[in-house]
Image (tube, rainbow over all chains, first blue to last red; front, side, top):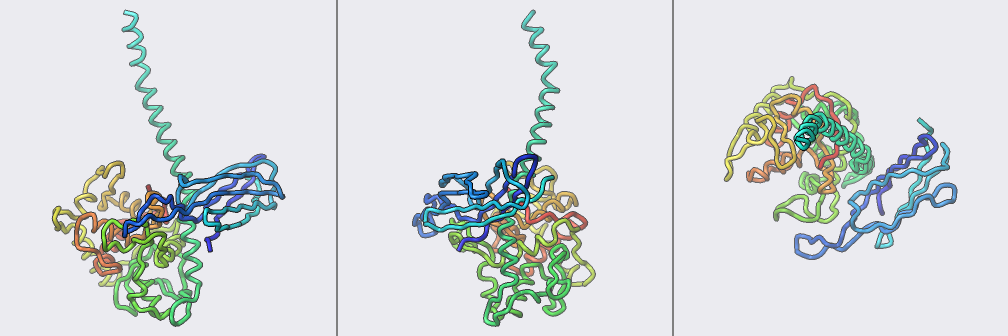
Length: 106
Length: 280
């Protein structure tokens, strides 16, 4: 099973700033192992972020995203104490969902 | 005439303009570094390491929570900056990795060979056949643990103890190794790390006899290597430097590796520890 994400969500001004670290191999499928065999592609395909039942970010990723990806974005309408839920799904169908509570302004 | 005047005007304006641009660039680089630090995937390794520390493993089905890293059983906070140090139970000077081997053997019942089997995490493409960190996505319990242990000393002063004769001996041996030149290239650590302002491509090489350089270097390992997508430990740093010098392979947690680390730790004494850092 995939490792948990590290999520920071902070209200700054009128926007919630979210920073996410995901643990993922993000193999491109172009590399070869010691035996010369291609290493199969393994990468995150979809990322969805929801807040209060509404999707605030939806992304389609490919093999150009780095290993252990870092995602940073802002959205409006969040308040401290509320939850942000993040889900990724990769090309092998593996999934991981984590959530974080929005921290107060500052 | 008119062109001359314009040219003169351009020349007059250029130097401050250039200086300003450079200042801005420097500021931007600093901002970029700050951003990198906030997005340092080393955090993922640290989290795994903390979990592994508490996980019951090995034939004795025990956790490492009673492991003595020098400040008493189970004390992790501040332990890394006071390593390498002499341990009476093993009668050796040990760094974080070799001490973890001792704990994995003593507390968890692994054999020393098992404890040392995966010293570094895998990158996928081995550079040489005996590359100990080849293997796609191969995780290293050792690396994860070291990442977490090091993170528990973040912000503290580097303070390796030098009171025991064996600690001083390790320092002296490390110094000898640092200046020892050999191999097909007649290289030594000192070749790259003995002069000010040297670099390999764009990477500045720290002069290890200069306290400020040594502090910055020692204080930022372990580090997450962006180019490899892996976390690298101090033992790996030694292993890799020795390989690049075309020396015989440096044995993981060997006395030679610990001596070198002891020497560097002492050179970096008083510096602020800021690892696991993020590296190119």
